[in-house]
Amino acid sequence: MDWFFHDPGQGRVGPLSPDELRTRYRDRRIQRDTLVWRDGMREWQPLDRMAEELELSSVTPDARLPPPLPPIATLAHAGPAPVGGAYPHAARPMPRPRMSGWLIAVVVGLVLAVPLIGITAAIAIPAYHAYLDRSKVAARVDALAPAIEAAVQQARANAGRCPASAREAGLGDVPTLAFGEVDGRCAFRITVQGVNPRIDGRSVVFVAPASPADAWDCTGGDLPAQYRRPACRAEDRTP
Image 1: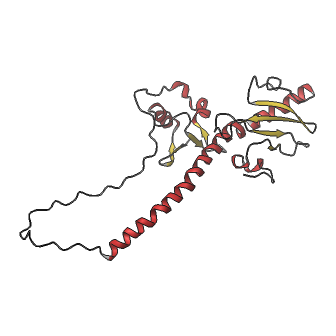
Image 2 (image 1 turned 30 degrees about the vertical axis):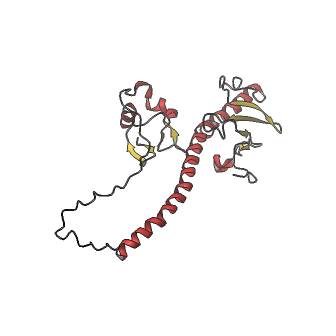
Image 3 (image 1 turned 90 degrees about the horizontal axis):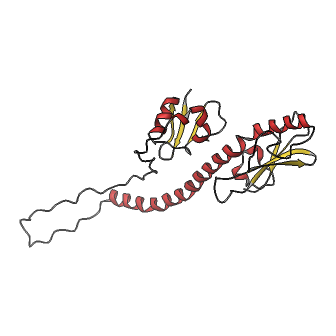
């Protein structure tokens, strides 16, 4: 099965076999928080979430090697200045060089490009960070929700009522999970942790459907809409 991973400097890298992905992890070219994807996955996930599938417990990163470098901007260097020799007529003033038309156009273009680059960076960098935050939220909320929904339904079928805790739902002790009822229907809340200080502590509430044919309502909670998948964004929720 082919795998891909996200490199901040190169973008999407792949396809790679599981062995190649493990080799890159061993060589510290990727880390546990690197986003990976394979066919069949709905969202990009941190490598740590796929550790069991990729058998990363059997791979030990080489501590002698440095971790991946951050993206490095390409620098343009001017060529060496010409070295002047002795002029046969030193007393005669040299004519002042003049810039040709095309050189003037290049200089003007560079001057205009600098603010445009700054504006583009001001837009692209926050968008990239928001993308990373959404990916982390997806791993901590959306990837876990289906299993929790099934556990709630099973616990309700067995006990005849909604589970009151993660342990009662058969999920053990999970500090970021809370259970209860909303309008007489089973519900649970997932609190986001370890993503970003701006949204850590925010939550998404999932409410069981009134009919088995309907989907769970995941528009509750105070997590901003920009970090939710489209199906979990309420119409009146502002980004």
